[in-house]
Length: 632
Image (cartoon, rainbow, N blue to C red):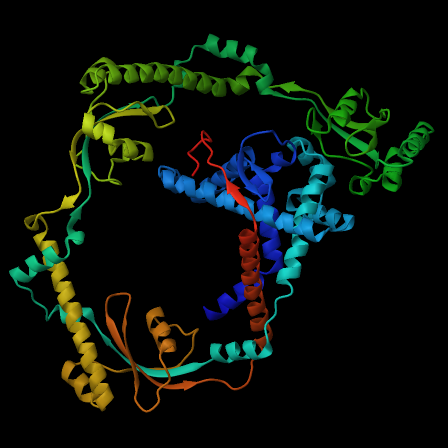
């Protein structure tokens, strides 16, 4: 437990802080933010440097998607709370402000990494790795799909690495003195010798008794324990369209759909090509022209790729790339590759964003359309679902109309649509029936409009062809329950408090007896036993409350060191600290402890830097409206 904290401090220094910043730069701003910067509203201004509303919106969506994948259904419920949504937005914006402050400090100090460092960082990115190694084909394809040029990726990585220089200078310079680490090392290995007596609450519960007056007094003194939350009794109509049955779809409809959408069920043409690439720069056109001439004179394409291509990763395999389909590579490269007609044919010189290329066709897989028999069931189910969705949409619209036209009741809508009006008993928030247990319904059920006006709600769409209209039949505000309703519960809690009070009195008596040296007689009188705690360390397997209390107690001097502790199960324990043993010599963990202290100090200094930058900065937050969910 203790050393886990030290290890966490040791492992969360430069590398992890840098990794978090690099991830945040992509996760918060999104790849698209490196490509386009539309003129839009401003979310914040940091020392005159604007953070656009669109950048914030992209960051918020990415963070929301991350939380949704992490928390699942629980996140959907949390989104029903507007305060929680605002908290997410505020947190994302604050992270972006901090990142902007760091970037400004980096620019002020003129920190800049080398081109080799940028290149190595890109090659080490897991997105471009395959089988633990950088894969150039994957690199090119991902850039093309993202609409991101190598220069844009290079600049964004350089920005992250520039931040790393500042953080390394800050965190890497943190240190811990040997004396400090040595003291912590010795304290971490300190042993404590003690005795303790457990006072079970159940023992005192058997001795406790309360009168009717005491039950009533307890009820009146603790009204918060008997509070009934606000409740509603609901009527509702649930429209559930489900999915359609494929058996009901006409065969002709399946054939017509197939003929109209054959491209959907086809395998597009794919090609495997090889290329020789020359990086752009002085002499590049002459060099690629010379390679084209050597190919024309009969030299082997694969051998030339191995020795001459600047794309060394594919060059090792004779320039061979992975199977590609139209539209997956750089447009110029893609067009030239799909213009080749015969295997072995070599293109003219092609200029792409990545360099100058000569491309040859290695293998071709023609386009293929799956036969109707192979996709009939899939089409039938698709059409059936569409029919069900269309029917549901018509019913949904009619339900919305009827609920609005006859707002005082759901009966008319139920009769026309053939639905059953379902009802609940009085329910509090979080107690809705499973079929309507949704944050959107909960918000409506307890809204002032439905409660006061007693009208039908608007149609609430639940997704997956499900919708509902609710009507608040009765509302019951929060109130203290009557004593008759909670008498037994009040008696139980009053008994529990009485037992706890008897246990506390017994613990005080035991401490007094221990101070006088009369503990043995007291223990015999009450039928309790004494337990020894010999050589206890901070890592010992003991109840946390006992461990924490034991190491917080002062070392005994002339009088015994005594303490009463409440345990997790409600029992009490009386501790008597006998002796404290602290090693005099450092252990082999001294270096690790010093490293951990340095790491934690570095983190504190980083937070201090952020605080200082914030204090010195002029930061203006803009109140944005109509940005999806409400902003702040």
